[in-house]
Image (tube, rainbow, N blue to C red; front, side, top):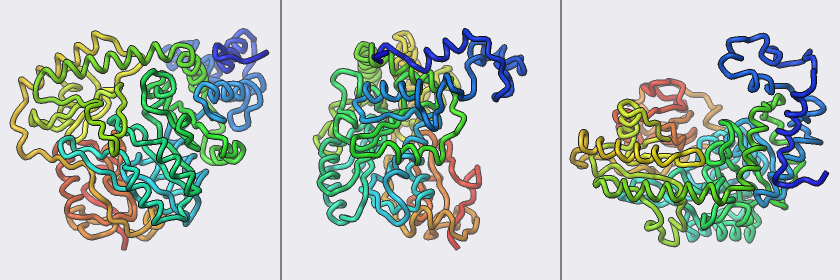
Length: 481
């Protein structure tokens, strides 16, 4: 039977499987929920009934030959990729598979420093050497921007032996680089171009969106379907172009991805891909309209700045994702993380994240107009009740790193744990980051400076959740001996 985007092969196979009276003498041990009635009551019989193991009629994620293979083919077609892999370890696993497929120990990879921690984790695993393109920082917003073509070209010319370049597109805040030009530069210099597209799934399906990685000719892209695509948390696609070997990439994926792929996650990817392929333009047109309405309303409150395409300068901000509701809060005298906490604790509104100067309210396929109205009303009230002078607020979000060792060398080197106030001018051997968004303040191998220590202290005072270090309170840091 010929496949079309109206098909959802994994979902269809699960429906057929459910009609059969198969006696389970395999895992999972709850046996369609019978062995765990409390879980069944909580999740529902239908949910636990399709929490099954790989088997002939349902295919095998590690080596797909039937329905999962068909789902991959349809996903590749929908995204304009040479091949697509269904990933059940989150977009972290997709990003790490990209890096591990492209560089190995001692080889260079060019990247901006404001990457997600998954990229740096991959460098710890494979031993590749990061070469940074330091992004410019917007002084008003205090956020790192995209990569300028002139900076990319300069770093490529200085490192002609680099094997790949990795691009964040878009950033968490919606900032896009000139992706097509970066791809062309990479290929001209015999480098692969990898794109962390975790927050750009909708670029493939919406009208008037920034260019997608596959349309730009990138070699690999990690698309986080569970963020803006509507699938279940932890489900993702890894997309590859024609220059990549499908077999090699699958080998890399199978080094770390589970051999027990969740059919809840797999079917959610399958159904969500079908939904976007058939109705994506309509869905994201509505999302973009809601985001613009929210921006207009928030900007009339005063003090807040919900930014958008007016930032575009053709270089460090080549384009902007209009579905992102990114809001600067410094003029009301509150850090973004403080507004985040007030919304959650006093108004029962959970937004995506807040940092020292901004917050992001994620608007996607499931939002409603009345929810937007509630958010705008709460923000107006927060300004009235808690707003104050913006003097003394920290603006700078990006600190240029001083690299003393590769992430792998530093992570596995002999280290000692000392009080954080004694770590100035020592080399860090672990990660420190605010999560979300998960962009490291320190990665293994970087020098700990007074500026970084001030930033960490300020972030803790403002209530940022600091993670990555062995000491959960970040009162001590591991440094090289």
